[in-house]
Image (cartoon, rainbow, N blue to C red; front, side, top):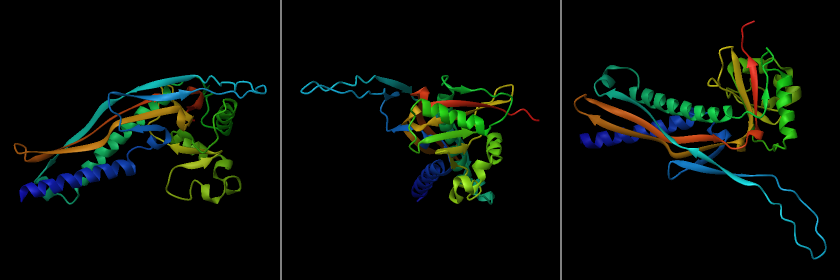
Length: 277
């Protein structure tokens, strides 16, 4: 009977961790190119250059575009987040300790996933908008928007902009971002609890994990989904083992993932000053 109970405990824990990771773990995984089920220690993302259309003479050979082909290798790393669950402690608390640890482990791995994506974004150096001793402004957003247009970055609903919470407050002070006359009632930032809004064909997402330097300059990123690749050899998995000497279960959450820069022309870094007024 005890073996059956342990198996039920383990299966329920694994399900709860997986659900928590999907629900509240990573904010950014779905905003970049993703490969799952990778076999090996690295993954390769293909990058194809622009083609040029040409004419041909009657009965002549069709001109070849001579596309520039290259690839980006992303190295995968293993990450773990574990903790103990004492068998008798669960009887003495009025909270679901198992659920608390499941959520904590899933969130820790989700933050690591986002950290990998942000590090890949931060490695781009081609398009940088200076902080100019000010926060996030409409002019900075429009400058990034223009850069994408000049670089022929597709306007296909797969543009994203991640900003810090101070910059999210700056956005809420921009009339065009919050006024239904500009964006429609369905895209108002106060219309739901979801903190992600469409503006200029771009999904804006606030995030607490963006880098900030010693001068309180926060780096925000305006990017296209195809500019960064995320690879996973193993999504979140959970191993629960019983340790009789501790009268506890040890819960180990783990994953194997990596992220890398594919095309920096599809990324604009927007630096914003967070120095208090």
